[in-house]
Image (cartoon, rainbow, N blue to C red):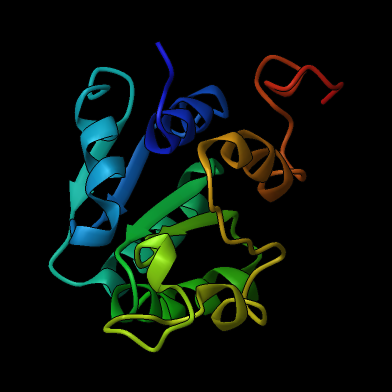
Length: 162
């Protein structure tokens, strides 16, 4: 059975030791939400009232536990609202992973509702930012996004030395 991109993403997060994701559901991340829901025995989702809170909570989680903080927001303004918390993480060097949705692939860069280029938006605040366009790209992108922490198994899930 082939896995979709959301399943690959959440399985990769679990493999990297992510235990909790702070966020707010939205159309652009429905697949990720469902993937987290079906793995709720291995990864928790804490729903917030505003995306900005999700980023600040992920930052605080990282600062106080020493573990990777993770926040999740939907397409467009949802991702934009993460910026304040992500700047807090950047300035305090707290390890935080931000995941956002995208418009449907055929609508990217067409100025439709919520068509914000998150890759450009996060360039100043992130060590790494990428747009994922297919399930095959997910695992390698996660590996690139998290190079500074050692993988719990000592090896990355693509088989290279950690």
